[in-house]
Image 1 (spheres, rainbow, N blue to C red):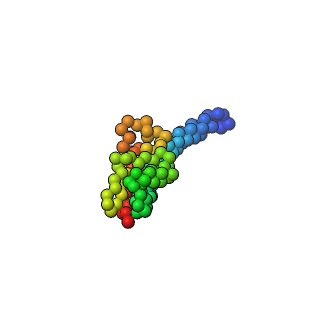
Image 2 (image 1 turned 60 degrees about the horizontal axis):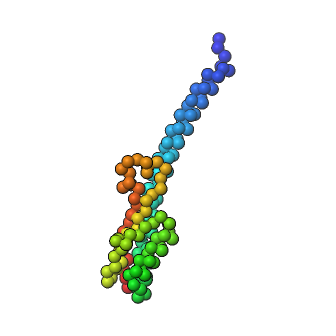
Image 3 (image 1 turned 180 degrees about the vertical axis):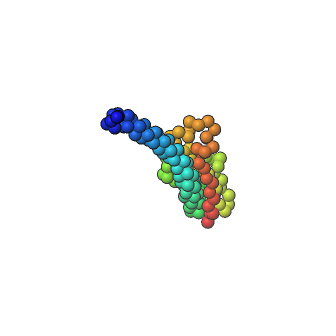
Length: 131
């Protein structure tokens, strides 16, 4: 008769635990990357709206287009230091200001995947009425 006190029984349990930890680790990393992309998209939308409001406020107060751009840029950087407000995506027309805020999302694994650049670039365009 064989005794249950040998190391075989414990080896099976440890094997399953290692597999479970590995699976949960992979799922956790994928979930983190997915959430990072989603949060960046939502955040950049709010940031673009705040930046266009800041630019609109400057223009309403009689400021120049350059002063409005500077206010929008400061607003975007205050929200997150990696935000960008490209000059070519900033437009002032008599009744409104339109701008785009861009940010590259920080991920653990996704940025290593070829072709994932389109998922990592979060951008939003916002228009605010002047006056």
